[in-house]
Length: 195
Length: 195
DNA sequence: TCATTATATAGGAATAGTCCTATATAGGAG
DNA sequence: CTCCTATATAGGACTATTCCTATATAATGA
Image (cartoon, rainbow over all chains, first blue to last red; front, side, top):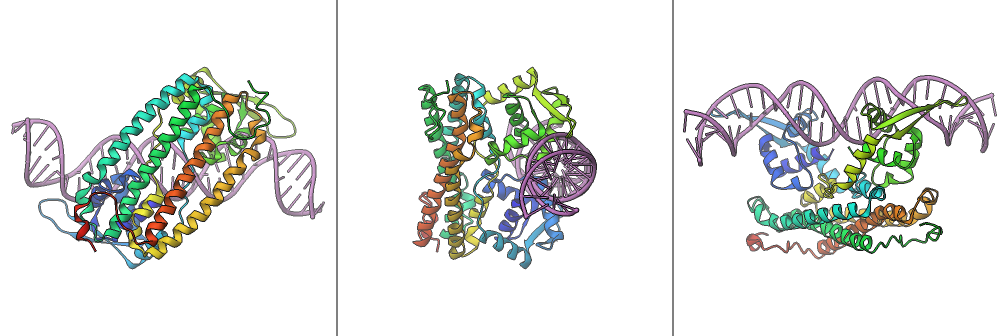
């Protein structure tokens, strides 16, 4: 469960409350791992039960008491183990690809309209990515080294590369559809028989 | 729920049983939408309740009776509606990116070892993708037109482009890590202060 | 003064997906 | 003769995630 490790990762920087964690999520990894507030609290309880984090109550008079969580040696060990192991990188579920697969069941005009709308949304998203570094300056100011910052920005870099690749691909699909070029570029012996 | 639409999509080609659906999933979209057998049966029941598919029992003496499902006009309408609407394309959860984000917490040697193993696995995956067209020939033979086949192969094309993009990116990350080049290429005013 | 935002925690219901198991029969391999 | 595979369906338990709601108080802004 990735959320567990994300929480351990943040607590390995410094002790935080559930509320703090929600804020730090929303200013950093929410672009590729959105965490619901209630899920953070539930996961913190479970991590405490498993002895991977420990909790300290900081009393407050004006507001509800803060429950500040910090990582335990067992939690650190588990985090480092996870960080050292190779990742899958190939998502096992992609809803957009399912749509593409069945798109032969609707007319090309419908598909072209959809792809056009998707491309517009993606170009806007690219503009949003360009603004991210400015918007998270207060967060990046927390970085303790250039190296730490480097890894944080790698995630943004990947997001942009991934988006650009998708835009390029969709544009090439649009071109082929407009030209009614349905070739599969794969030696398919029945190609001549098919209408 | 994408699985619903995937089932509707297949039933829009021809009526199938739950068992047939599992087989057809495993020979086609399992690369980007794996479906558990028990989930298929549960979803078929729900689709029947919602009047999106209808069921017919085909009696058999040697084996348990087949329950053959076919799409209803309401189901077709829902499918076409879904196929016409733009897709998100940006996955909201990416476990590998969470790992990258926190990789500053382990030494570069650990990261390099992991990336190397990941790259090896990805190059093997690329070889697997190259074999797919041959392995699914009996499935592609079902295609009724070049156009239908075109959309099917688009999903493979995207898978390969996506993988190649990721490989290229990881290779560039490896190069930078080996050179200890931690620049973020983004105007960061504190760059000089950081160790 | 009234509404909104911020601080702070947490339970309940619903949805999605995985894993394991049960039932029933036929044919083929070793 | 037994084990495995294929055909065919489906329930139960569990995990992950989302959505909605409840509780409590202080500060800010219109």
